[in-house]
Length: 529
Image (cartoon, rainbow, N blue to C red; front, side, top):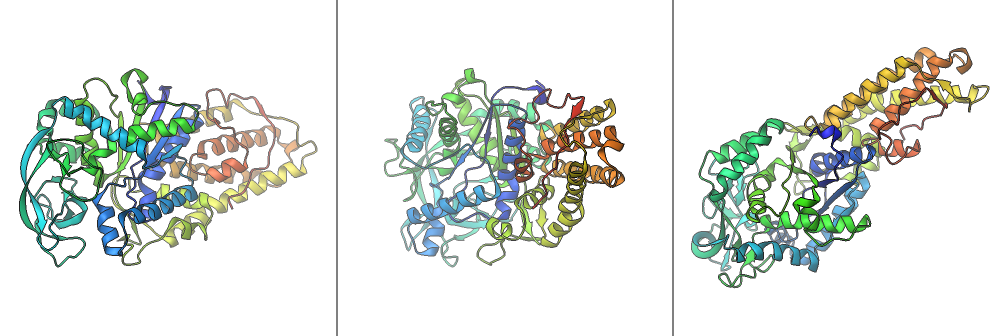
């Protein structure tokens, strides 16, 4: 089915933020803004949308950060969750429900894995895990760091953020603790439950071969590389002190692998968000195949292995019960002045800091324009100011002032103006072009933002040519301009959210037939402030 004509209910999943700190622009510029703009476009088309996420409290990164800060993991989660939610709200990320890490969350996750355990999907396996002799603790995932055995970049345990290849157990090179980098682990054996990913090779290969041509190249490359090797056994449990207690008799005292919680976590946050929208369902109910949801998943490339392979295989392991994601849209890293964001080094800009200095719409458009879709991109304050003055606020506010003056000087500001067939044709072409950038498979924040700027510049030039003429002297020319500006406001509404709200647009300004007009009442557009 052509996604542009797909009217099914769409479920949009943002990545589950780890509550080990707040959010800076590097976090926002990737999957959160991408998911928000996609959700807003779907709503603007009049479609039924659920956009959801929720924190990932079980991650070992929480344990590691809390230990370095000298507080409990629980305290860190509470503090960080508040900071995360504040940042998302400040920049206008329109999640329908931010699922809390509560008893229902945990029950949903445990049910998902208990059903697979009862079906005999998991295997008991003896493995060699990194171990700190001083503390008597195993260290995995965010508790350990070394060189990736595939690309040799610095990597945490379990997954390399650079090449996105997995590394299990004792495979990191020259490993050390992330809490105390001088502390080198030894290795001890432990029996854990694992998920035999290799058994799902044929189904995973078929799933990805059908979709890779439409996905971003780096994601496709990683999937092909991983599938070219023997697929690893994925830990289901770990002998750790932080995380959700695993209910399996073979592994007493162990916890679930936090990375694998995220698919049932998505089921839980889906039902939570649906309830906020007025529909109460059991967790997982909306994911059942008969519901026929269109699932779109936004995530960073550094998390893509788990979401594209183990998570998909875990859904497959439930038989034909659940839908599978139809689109997985990844992003790369977003940098600050060409260097990686670093909270510990103070090289960071928070959402709130930026919004104290620039309008939210300016921030959203610039982040979209420079989004790291196919490679690393960078935030530049000089670049933001230049774009705002020369291509966004400057020309738009000049355009708005010209139209406002025309309305003020009109003999009858409420008298409709004619709209020509030529203008209707231009609007049809404009909206079709926006559809290619807002919809799959060509979805692109940067091209959507660039298209907004192109049309602002085009219409500002048209307004300059009409400036000084009264509406009555050139009614069709003015009518065409008002009509095209109204269409641009609607098309830009997923990005320029405050401008759209100030213009009084409806909740579905791009629904079918919305611009099939032969006349339009003049209006004074708001300014970007």
